[in-house]
Image (cartoon, rainbow, N blue to C red):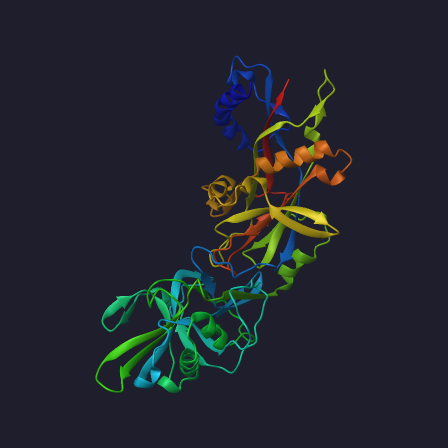
Length: 476
């Protein structure tokens, strides 16, 4: 029987995809058996559910996770609707070679290099837009053994260096000695061997026989916008890639030296290593009154909600009426859960803007309320978490609507809904199990970037109203 149902469903999906995309979906609509003649003991139904939507603030985001590529943002963005976000980078460096004798060389010049990741959040059309960055020493223990959140802050010392960067031209390749290399922020460290950053790196190297000893002697550097208080204009925030394999596609301090005994020259580097170096992106917000209204609303459900890349605004979604699908069989009086074949949450950007892009992708978490606090866990559709295949199924990527310039997202969570129905069936007196509770987060590619104002579950505009459409089957 199971195989027959699967075969029938394969035939139904073509018709269902057309049916679900139509507005005004009727509840408990039975699809005609004409779609799959010959099978008459299974009903395929389409349903929609009421949705409550709220904006919440969530800053407990670990920004020190080592993803495939480590992108970190530095600088300030002033969004006219949301407000100001400031990002700073904490990172460690290690010497390219342990045991070098710096007493036999003279440092001719030195540069701090941060490779441009190819993305600037915010306005990136002003060719004269500049940002001033300042570099400080980290003065407390900093280790890969610990996780760091976006709100964490480490103690820093006196200023190492300051440099101005043209944000627009960060995207251009750089000519170094007649060779064009990857685009990067290139901050000159004046003074050669006497530059405080250079001298601290050299001093730590002189007393270190391995990398862990070096990072204990030199905890790292902190890079942020020089002016974090008085800036009040829109500007782009560039993102940099910390990990790489060469001087110009990995974060490093590059020294140009010559020998004190002959005419030879060399390049010495202190670079970022994913194996030995800790890092995290600190992101702070100063929201406008308009943005704060999203967080402070006392309504049960809001017609619009705010979503940002973490840390920041997330969307709380409560889908009610799960128990409406748990009905006793009229003949046996036995209550069973239907088979969920499709469960799609669809949400749309209601106020598109070109300067401050919506998240490229979104991600769901299952929410359980314990002692009044939200506890997050992976949705059932994410397993096995070691595989990336479930991510492709869940989707959550932004897609452009052909009829407008806005973006729309679709999340597929049938297994999560099936699990909720199973729990509700096993615990009929638990009222909370009548609600499927999901948290929507922005993607984690670029911390502190992206924002979107989405249509909520009770939005009056059918085009942007959040929807949850379900397809399920019930044996007769």
